[in-house]
Image (cartoon, rainbow over all chains, first blue to last red; front, top):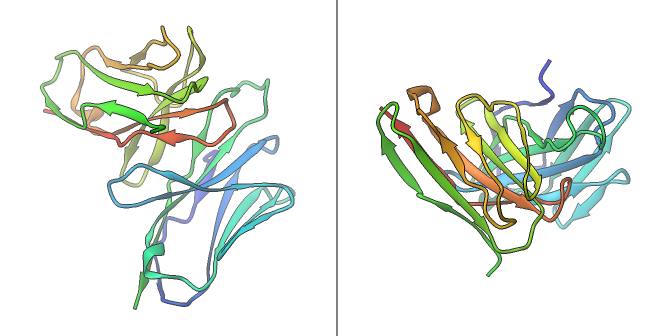
Length: 114
Length: 112
């Protein structure tokens, strides 16, 4: 089983739609979680960190479900400019054998069309 | 401007010819790392460095070397490149491990 897995999509949605991505992780002791956005041929940029209590930034909501070992990203009222690849990233617990690593999912492609 | 700078941005080289991709950050970050990105495989960590003189293998270290002699620089060395190292490479830095990662613009490497 991969350490971090995402549905690669692609997700094709109309403007204004709500879309959700999930990302599962295998290490139950993982401690930091992130969503990054990557535009075509560009570098990834942080979209949001994911906290235990969940967090929201405008149209974007991220949640963590430790019991089921996944994080989610919800995008409401999709815009054309949201078209990108969304990558989740996870760090393991401090002091474990994977201490220092940062593992990314393979990314989910989102295309928002008019 | 706070940034991570990689050079070169594009490189075509031949099998076996040693090359170095430089990475420099001006944010006084402790943590730096290298990734390669291939279609369908996402970003895979090659090496990381928790601080000066502290480096460790990521998930795909074979065929690569790194060094961290100064806090700001973290070069990636391919001693004898092979075609399977053709990829898009990203350097990233964070204030500390577990914090937000800032990425360089990427280096597209082709080994023929």
